[in-house]
Image (cartoon, rainbow over all chains, first blue to last red):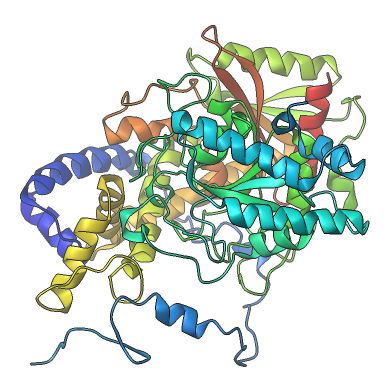
Length: 97
Length: 472
């Protein structure tokens, strides 16, 4: 069983607010999922390379494009979606006192 | 004639022969949705006005003899695929009021053909789930039994096709999210090879698994839509350039003498509900001359645990963008960090939080090697299993799911829900194409799906074999 402190620590890393009751729930759920995935410990993976992407072998080269802006008229649409703005700027709380 | 019962091919014929107009076809679906969807809850939003406008345009095209196989055909889109101007909630409170500022590449391609977009369908929040019970906007009911789930996460799309609320639907499949609901609802569900269909405009869940796919009433329809939405997209750097040689189309006649079907023993162990029906289906293929070859995919039992490390890890990174700063729900905090915490606490549902937590744990310092890296190595072994099997066989056939649709509220423990993906996740770990087709039903008249898995980029082969199966 993972500890409550661990649950709090992970939530903090994830920038996820959780309530006291969620803390208890996550402790139970995470423990049961981790117990289950520990099944992987019985596999011998020495000398096995990881597969970060299933199609990696089909990618012959990095995909890049010319760094040229495209006029998609989308900037204004995206700015409209921002919860707090000042002019065309994103407004956030100050991070330095 | 009930227009809503038509397949794409039949509707196309009717439109072409002027038996009915695209406008009449769209009205038939919209009216049916309006009358009956309060019982099913397949749709999160319906765009009546937009659909009728598109139908008028389609009728003009038909009159000017400028129509394609999909002109005037009404579709429904899973609510994680962006359609410009329509809401894209992903079944989440955090995107409840998010209106798509642009369209996904697949939507652009469908619109070019003159497809009618009826609305957006319900799903498990951020596609995390196997029942649509994780939607923040209520569960979708299985059209065959309203006490049961339609499967998930593309449950709204599968139920919409099965209820004749649309001619076809798009979904996404990260660990089985098209094939499992297709199986539960008795429709055809295609998950293409990773990379064949652009992910541009699909809201990210687990980027090395996610793939847009198709839910239809027939295999032929699946082929029509696949042809339209697949292809290299400069906007998705993981979309594929690889095209299979012509010979990969597979058999075209009902004679299957040269076909070797791999039957992995790990998928037929013990007794389970769908086993007998699948075995009977295999007999039918054998009677057409196909050779059934016993194979082993020895690492199968590690697929689900590997998936439930890697997919949540990728999700935890992808979902960090919902911080209340750039779009979506935004809760005011005392400071910047407090705003993040409050926004995510309020915006995300239980399962999404759970997966973010699992993923963050697996990626955290001290656990990365033991969980994330180990799981990615196991993924290699699972892939090698398939590579080896495909040296001996042309396709692999398994049940899509061990059981038929389960009851709403039946699976309360997260782990028991995860286990319903047991026959579908391996395919996503390896990036392979697979299709689920309805092949029978249980005594309680619930549909059962059969899964055909192909080599990378051999969609046409599995589609052709599925077609032949249906014609037996």
